[in-house]
Amino acid sequence: MGSGSGSVRARYLVYFQYLGTDFNGVAAVRGAQRAVGVQNYLEEAAERLKSVVPVKVVISSRTDAGVHALSNAAHLDVQRRSGQPPFPPKVLTEALNRHLRHPDIRVLQAFRVPSDFHARYSATSRTYLYRLATGCTRPDQLPVFERNRCWALPADHLEVAAMQEAAQHLLGTHDFSAFQSAGSPSTSPVRTLRRASVSSHPASPFVLPQECRLQFWSLEFESQSFLYRQVRRMTAILVAVGLGALTPTQVKMILESRDPLGRHQTRVAPAHGLFLKSVLYGGLGDFAAESPACAQQESQGPGTRGAPGQPEDFRPEISGPKAGGLEPCLQ
Image (cartoon, rainbow, N blue to C red; front, side):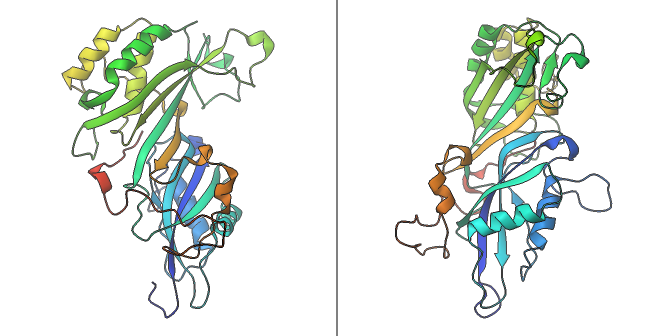
């Protein structure tokens, strides 16, 4: 409940996507710097909602400069003037998109959530996708529409079977210190990698028939939380395996070394090939996997039911500050 009589502060979970090329990461850049984060634009759009209290956007998963997101998430509180009901989620989504001043950011969908929900600490799963392209002996051989959206490798092919074997060594709960870049705020390097896959990617629609030498590949990693640049460093090591520079057994040795400054593990894949693919919460699936019925989830406030035939407000299985004690880091 807000400070004014009859004024309700409503918390929303908001899914959004962006091309990261023009941004200094997703986090807001404060001060007079020329660099700008995605959060700066989201908060600027939220100011136009005329909330009684300033709107602060709390990002679920922080991404580094140049990294993209198919679906990131955040929570924000909006408190309207006394006597005005909370915005329906669909109205909030449309209003934010209308006020966004950068064409490379889009709000996908919003949900009303309980006041103790936290977009960062309530997340139960995060999935990153990394795109590779082979057959590019020169940078100018990559279609202009694919530049800044994949890592172009000069090799003609990758030893995918070896990469898949190496990826198996990374699965499970481990100390991932060897894949953590300096500057990580995490108190523990232990993470559980639930999925690591390497596969051929569908042909790009931007590749002309005469450019059949180009082939695209996808790496996907899923965990509740990742260390600072862990995904990009794991990607670089797996690419080294695919190029024949490392063996799957060496990847196991690198992991067990727990040494982030070793000869091989200082490699970091470029930011522009990385996409945050999804953020999941207990009780609510990934935005991209949800049925259209999700868009009908209009709420009258936490703990109350909507009209007959409509679902209740989303209530996550994990809520409250720092659930699980894991903090996602920049990738």
